[in-house]
Amino acid sequence: MEISWGRAMWRNFLGQSPDWYKLALLVFLIVNPLIFLANPFVAGWLLVAEFIFTLAMALKCYPLLPGGLLAIEAVIIGMTSAAHVREEVAANLEVLLLLMFMVAGIYFMKQLLLFIFTRLLLSIRSKMVLSLAFCVAAAFLSAFLDALTVVAVVISVAVGFYGIYHRVASSRGEENDMLDDSHIDPHYKTVLEQFRGFLRSLMMHAGVGTALGGVMTMVGEPQNLIIAKAAGWHFGDFFLRMSPVTVPVLVCGLLTCMLVEKMRWFGYGETLPEKVRDVLQQFDDQSRKKRTRQDKIKLIVQAIIGVWLVTALALHLAEVGLIGLSVIILATALTGVTDEHAIGKAFTESLPFTALLTVFFSIVAVIIDQHLFAPIIQFVLQASEHAQLTLFYLFNGLLSSISDNVFVGTIYINEAKAAMENGAISLKTV
Image (cartoon, rainbow, N blue to C red; front, side):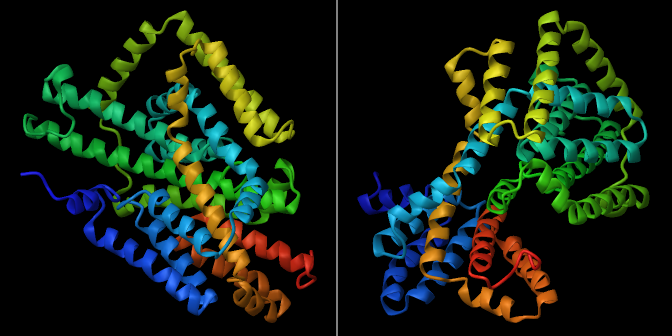
């Protein structure tokens, strides 16, 4: 029997999201206009809290959908205007270009990244040195490339290698299912479990590395570009001014990486079983023999493009997004990717977040129009001068722990810049 129209509409609304989540969003949409009529300031903070809630519940539903509905309602009821949203988007165009073009550009360099991490995995036998190498490599790459792409490549390497050995252990060839261990000998299961632990730790080290490296440069994280633009810093300026904080954090992060491996804490310290290494090495040897001259030229071209990327960013030869666009053009033209659909796949990872970032700017427009952060900024500015930076740091960290860094960074740099222009703080304080 076919379901009712109402039930069909309910199922379509936010798709597979839980019913309680759908109901919560409907309550938000109904309550917000009523509270806005009574007290715009409270309604503004309620909207921010609701938006942070959608970010925290990202696994239930991608925040673009519920956050976008909240943003549309905010414009309709007058919390902000479409013109102000456009101004915020225009002011942060460089960040949108970064996400659209730089992330897509790195997609066409995945072969080189896979080659680098594969060589690291098979060339270094010491687990501590290997973990450090993965962390450092991920940090360096994330300082110039998109962190999500770097992590995705590491995961691809790990899953690929796991699948290779799982096929050998199950003796099922290409029909093997990596999620099914029922046909595997108990001895192989022990080796597989050790191999899983080894791969998990490497992926975590690489993930931490992307955070350590990404925070050091203005292109490592989207919020860094927003801050750099507001401060008038270029690539080198950002690196040098942030280094008193970022370099000690990097050193401590690398020391922590070595410590957890040495002490085997929290599941770290698992080594690569020799049986697995032999299988992976044989597979890699076969792959290298099959690599044609055309494949080798592709790797060389991608490496040269990587040098161009680093040089262009360091010398600030163009806006970051335009440099990313040049990477797309060079990588596709020189490696033979000419099909429109093949090129389009590069944008599937970046465009959803680019759209979400535009929604961020809508909420930022509400915060500015409703002066929501004025009490917090006033509280910070009333503190002694030497305590202001500490309070900024603490509040920023607290909000970032429950929300998105780009969202928080945009708000904070706008408020700090406004406070400086009004004479409330000085360059010495900043």
